[in-house]
Image 1 (cartoon, rainbow, N blue to C red):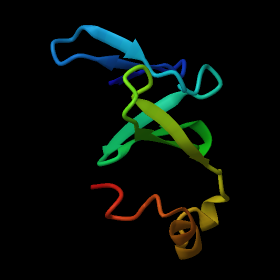
Image 2 (image 1 turned 90 degrees about the vertical axis):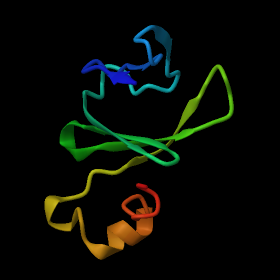
Image 3 (image 1 turned 45 degrees about the horizontal axis):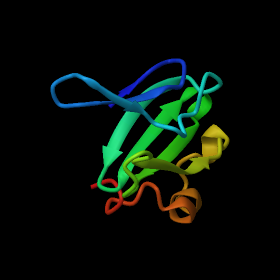
Image 4 (image 1 turned 60 degrees about the vertical axis):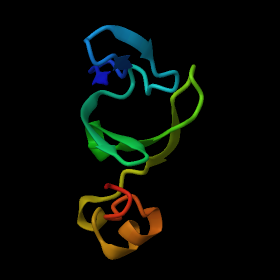
Length: 96
């Protein structure tokens, strides 16, 4: 998988050949800064602390679907227990 600063997500074969673009890529309004794989898919982190969650599907033409976008929260509460429990996204089980 390769992500661009223009918000594109490209799937690449193991030999380096281009396979396809993810249909629900965030686009140019979301500059991708980081990507993190987890057992059910991957997370994209972008500017302004925005995170987008994708999960793997069984569809050949659309192997990943956007599940949710985590809202930007004020810095002082970004990692408080309420936000973590509410989203569940930082659960150790989810990220393994």
